[in-house]
Structures are given as structure tokens and as C-alpha cells.
Length: 302
Image (tube, one colour):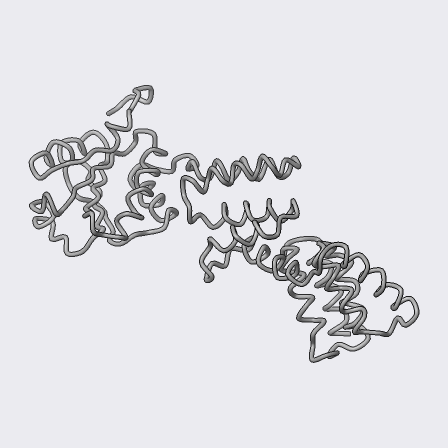
């Protein structure tokens, strides 16, 4: 077995094989440590997305597993022997024998789990480390530093949803709504990561805001109007929208709940619908959302 202190270079951990070198690179090598074989071809789109994930996870395993890539267009012999019918196809060898495998392009988390079945649990991936670093920077108030780390993560894994959401949040917190929207648009519409959902809701609220100078004037006018007629739900609703667009979610929640307390079905439930968007923008685990939901429940079920 390889010693823990032995330095394994990338060339040793990730190699290209041929039909002629397969026995040496895979069968014989798997008697020392597990070997993963990636059957691929240049024309295969899913192969191009899977192979970088395999490479990243093999590097993270720090020598506990080896990756062998075999281009079946140039070297079809072994693939025929193993009855590979579609690619990408991945086989794991241990002790000279195939012991596990999968077909198709799996997400990183499933690839990591596949490798851990061969090697035992390993440390966090490079992406996971970067995401943790970014979260620590945000907690410390260093939004610019966190944005740089999220951008670094996206250079490694451009479709990482958590990095996309994190970078979009950084831009949003710095008031750059346009850049935040551009970054959020990098994620598929079907993505349902909670932070991404929150970002999208915050962007929807921000899109309702007029220019800042006009917003300040409108806010003052609406507040004055409510001081004269506190039951003016339309004015209160427009004020809540302005406050939410400016990121003042707690104040917006107060106004929307005031409308619901007075008339829960006002304007076909517009206040309740807007309130749910505010909760999404704040994050459903946030204090704004938790306190708001408690107050909403008290109103609806009293």
C-alpha cells in the first residue's frame, strides 16, 4: 500500500490509458489502491461534464484512489470486453476486479459518495472549502472578500448553485442589483436552492423600486398620507413595496401584516402574496420570516 506521506503527483493520480496499457494501469494498479476507469469519447457531451468532477474528487481523495481515462474511439477493445453500451461509463476496480460502477453524468455529491464507498469518507472538496471560507468572510462582514471567493469557486465549477447564489447575494448586499441579477441568471430556472430562491425573491422586490431619489420622495409622501388616514390600505401597500425594494424587510412586513389584520382578503390577497415574497427574500429561516409567520398565523387563526 502507498504510505500516507508519499507525494502523489497529478500525473500519477490521473492518467490516460490504452487497450495495451489497461492491464498495467488498471488491473495491476488496483491491487495497491482502488482504480476508477472513465470510459469517454470526444463527441460525448455528458463526458465533458463528468470528467472534471471525477478529476476534482480524485484529487480531493489525496492519493487514496486513481483515475484512468480511456477514449473508446481510439481504444475500443476493453470497452467491448466490459460490454460498455453507452458513455460516460465508470467502473471501479479493486484487487484486479471490477467491483462497482455507474453510467451517465452524476452530480458532484453522488460522485463523491461513489469514491467514498471505495476509499472511506474523505475530507471536504475544494469547492466545499471555498464555500465555507466565503461564509466565514460574510459572517465577518467582508462582503468583497466573500465575492472573490465565490468567484474563485465558480471558475472551478461554473454551475455550482451555492456559489452562484452566494455571489449574487454579495452583489445584492452591495446594492448592485443589475450584477446580482446577471449572476442569479447563471442558475437553471428549475434550481430550488433555498438561498437562490431568496435571491430571486429579493430581486423581484428590488425590481419594483423607482430611482432612489424618487423612492425617498414617494416614501415620505406615503408616510404622510398614512399619518392622515391610517386605514388607507392602498397607500400602506405601496409603502410596503417601496420599503421591501430598499431591503427594509422588517418594516415592510409590519405594514403588510397591518393590512391583513384589518382585511385579510384585501385586493384579492395582494398583501399576503407580497408578504410571502418578503419572507422568501429574507430567507425562510430568518428572524424576519419566523416572527412574521407567527404573527400571520395569529391573525389567520384567531
